[in-house]
Image (cartoon, rainbow, N blue to C red; front, side, top):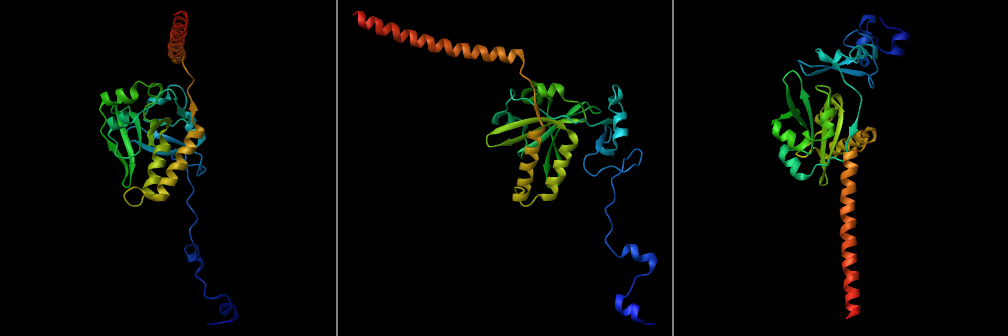
Length: 251
């Protein structure tokens, strides 16, 4: 049967199937503890320490694991602090000791295994690198950031670029976010221009959010000694030159 309405509007899907005719709306993010909807960007994460997995959480559920004493269970809330220590610089020799084949890596302490874990992004995702405790102590263990590092939920994020290595203490979820982004964008042998641009933008955001640790009294004392030695050497050289001129004049 045909009629004006069918010719004008074209064929129609049966009412029960119309929901499949168009594109599906994106599935909303939900808290994996209570099921409430959460914003796609900006919600909290918890770490399942035994499975080394991240789960989404609403603010109310995440706060349950932010309380003192709640960080020793199988779920731990990921904090939101970004730190950097300008006094702790890493040179090329330190990076070579880490034996990381790319220019980015992150390190965290696995409490369940009671060991340090080193990971770096690759086309296959997060790739683990062997890291012995002696190398950790030599390269990173003496820095203040390593002493502040919370097991399982924070990481030391390193980037080697243009002859320098920057180190940040960051929430561990952004490290896995970076891994996912690099895996999605990676092209060719070196990642490609799009991946490099995304990496640059990512670290610019980290740099803006990172709070520099305040200088310690020992650092100010050491710097004062260095300046004093430099001034002393300069004054000694100037005094010697003046004495030489005076002696020459006497003669």
